[in-house]
Length: 324
Ligand code: ADP
Ligand code: DP6
Ligand code: CO
Image (cartoon, rainbow, N blue to C red; front, side, top):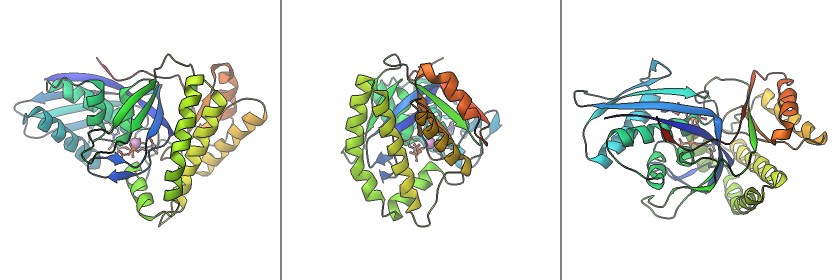
């Protein structure tokens, strides 16, 4: 009863930022992302009859706190689904900074869901796997697929119609994304806590939600047509709207550092110089930059020039979840 799975992170171009049901992890809007080949998680789940509890090791270090709780709560769902009362050793390796806004929860839970469901003998298809992994971390529902994926919020109370669907696979379009590392420090406000506070207290939240349908229609059209400028403009504006909602929260907060803003300005400077490039930022200070392959060298050079940038990791579109 042992399996290993690999899942890549995904970065949302249309963000998921708020839940309508916390326990089932049902979102308030559809979101759309690009899975990246440069960042991923590999997880081994080993169910053993003689274990009295689950254990969780992340990057070789035994975890006990909140991270452990999230993993055991998730394994509990898998056990219920399979109708088996058996505990597991979980060992995971993040080739992505943990809890720094590079979507470690997306690759982390997608790899866990795939490995755990396989190890316990469930034979899930992609849709079932996406629906299951959503319960670990919402964004992980999109990491089941390579390339572009959309998480459909669904309408049903039980969440049975809330899962991701593929929009265009990793071979559709060679669009690139640079992960600009400013800090690998773990964020003080998790994505979960940040979006909860925003939904509950920000007067800007309603405006954010109203603006989503138009962004989604526009970006899906642009992806099909490989219209880079349209994808970039919509994604960058959508990210800024999301981050604006947190400034309206009570108490207000932002994930940005001064270096975050410097990178944003550098991307604007690229455009002024005729290099089409656009940024997006998740719940964390680090920035991701969208560009096309022909501008890779120049984009990387200009990003490395910005004071505060410690690394630039270049990615192509990545594949969906796989078993090792
Ligand atoms: P991020 O921007 O990295 O997704 P989040 O606040 O959404 O940040 O989630 C970070 C949390 O996700 C971690 O604190 C941990 O609980 C969980 N996580 C990260 N990596 C893994 C992994 N490989 N396996 C299981 N859980 C993970
Ligand atoms: C800003 O999926 O990490 O990255 O469902 O509570 O685990 P939980 O949150 P998470 O939220 C991601 C928020 C985001 C935008 C996105 O990935 O769509
Ligand atoms: Co996350």
